[in-house]
Image (cartoon, rainbow, N blue to C red; front, side, top):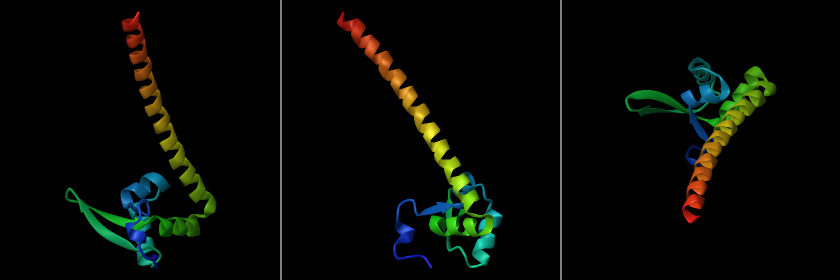
Length: 110
């Protein structure tokens, strides 16, 4: 099912926890997809906590089949918006720190 090397590509896989954050689905939905043969998975353990690793491309296809393409696009857009807001806040904080440093340096030069 998976194309050659897909498991090793950066961003091609995600955990069940990340899938919940990004797509709003739960572990039961993922297990249902695995049992139906729609999703390939690998088991992993991090600090004693088990998780499922699944392929993003297969998950997106399965979500589109079950809930429709609109739901998939909505969830992807929400996730991207959350990342953009986080990046904007990070940059605002960095800009504020640089402006304060600039003022201190200007005062020292005078």
